[in-house]
Length: 456
Image: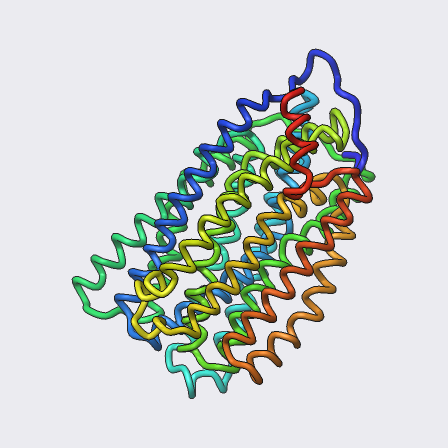
């Protein structure tokens, strides 16, 4: 494990994947992610339809809190395994790869336990029951939800690192969401309108069931595999890189969930539910790049460590161009039919204010698509520390800004502040990638990427 240093390819051990195969796998990943987005959208629509406005607001807040903790309790191991498994396995050193995997699993389990303890402590806060009678049950359900979300993210990365795309994506992205939609409908048919506790528990329990096969398979595989013994230097590097990748992977998504909680605290659960819906709907724009990144991560890790940084220029800029073009098309849909999309959740969200919030979030996501897989590139090439500093700066400035904007300007002001923070977090890493790696991963690197694609 040599951080931040590209090594030359070892003849006969590993062959770089052909770009045609990478593009084909990327297309499959995008298709799965788009299907997942449709099901995710439908899942939240069904949840909104089968609960009242207050219950959906509480559910969305609990889901945001669980998501926030899940980004932290996985301890950055989803990126650790994407970085080091392809590097070791590509060099033919599977015992070292399994040693890293085992260490990652232990680290994640400790993180999941810590996250659960946080929710248990929150559930016994003495003043919360007065305003929210179901507070304790909701906290415990959110604890289970956070653990399952974190574990699912880690398992997905393990299978992605092994180029097993369907095993990585189908259980959580497709099977779980379908199961939740059906289960919510059955529960409503049997018992009538659902509470926030019931919806959260159904989501968490079904996710655990959907991950059972993956979990058993990974544990069985690791236990029977030959594993190398990591040296003291390698253990030290693992710890150092873990802290960097932990922060990089936790801060941006955690900031998004913190923003939802800030809005809920200042403007109330009902308005927070509308902002949550608009933000989740705008995430449709993120899906193409997220889908491409499912395949691109192990590709970047292998190519960088075997052939250097410039070998990833064409694939990174091609990913940016593809995701940006799709983002523009989705923004056109939001502009024309945004209110109708919000109305699928609840009639209370069909108003000009929430439509503008949706467009603001959409523009923020479109900028992110234009910047391409910049954060992923920096994580997998040993530049996670500078990326963490950027994200920390944006978060430190962003939290009080969002709070002030929500208090003074309402939901539109809060959305504009959130968009400004994420613009900063997207643009500054691009400058780092260009100056430190000589790679422009944005749509503006397309011309160089296209010539590299043709040569490849």
